[in-house]
Image 1 (tube, helix red, strand yellow):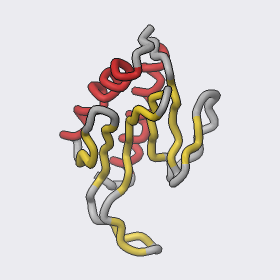
Image 2 (image 1 turned 120 degrees about the vertical axis):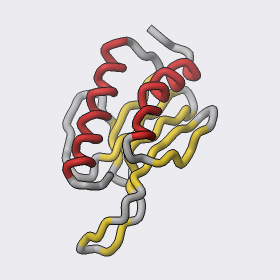
Image 3 (image 1 turned 135 degrees about the horizontal axis):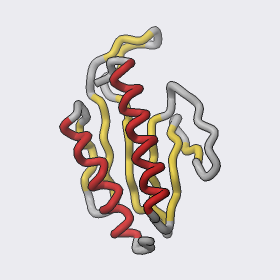
Image 4 (image 1 turned 60 degrees about the horizontal axis):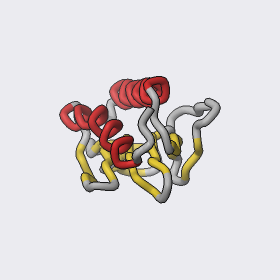
Length: 120
């Protein structure tokens, strides 16, 4: 089990970085933050969208926040936090294999959703 926030951040980021080659653009890549956006222009009834948040990982205080785009579906999972701007995710201070697997599963579900909606 990992408890060092930098190690947790780096472990999760390493699993997310390959998505940068799958149609996403890195907006932040620092020692405390990493996030990816889709930059495909999309017409919606509300207007044109030029970028859409996919995932962000941030060291924030005494936790690592993993924020996921969840604007197209609702997830009711114990331990899942609701952030502002239609983001859900995790606030973790320790990382075991089960939690990492759960995070990776959510990332892949959301990536599949982006592909189905043709957002990437």
